[in-house]
Image 1: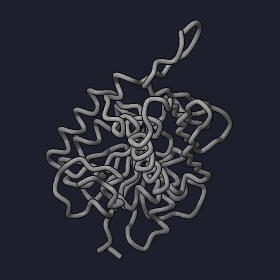
Image 2 (image 1 turned 135 degrees about the vertical axis):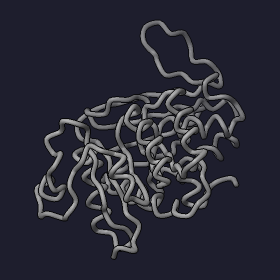
Image 3 (image 1 turned 30 degrees about the vertical axis):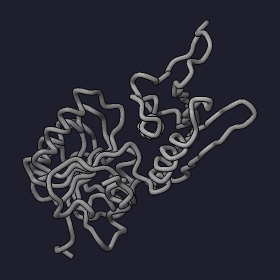
Image 4 (image 1 turned 180 degrees about the horizontal axis):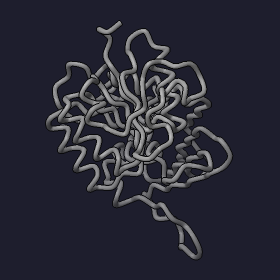
Length: 272
């Protein structure tokens, strides 16, 4: 049992954090060695199993990432941009795989993640599910096949507690569409329509965000032309798909060379 890769889960009290903890605990390929929360959280010092409402599992929630990462082979991190950037530096020091599902990061954040990846294995993706990553590949291929007579719209729907928009997955899909057409997403992205906006710009990639209830995640990529529409769709009904993908990434990263990878690499779908 102690030969299995040790995993630390950050943001242990959150919905994804608890799902990740359960996924690692149920796995026969990894073991939970740490659970992290922000300083001052009322879970600090408690056994994480008991804090989650179950039996004790022998892992105490801590607010000390350096101490937790030092005994881990991998860190799975679905938190917030500022926390993830901090964790990236510490994970690099500890030489453990850093699996990042955090979304909403800016350019400065991504530069810091890239700097950490010079010394450690970082697997970062806006979505960890197999289905979504297949959808990314399909989006790129369809965008390459259909010219600008087909307007591209990315429509994403999530629960009412999600704080960033467009979602990381929507941005992945928009980037795939832009790559398929050989254009810069920044140059053709249309993320806001309100008031008298004028007609739609030819070749632009539009984004729409819907928030409501407890929706786990739905993403549509619509290619709309005169007389027809092609719609690619993925619907997630259980966060376990993201947790399983993140654990797969953590295990895949063991023994890799330092660098920044994504789920296409993990799933063997990458270009290189």
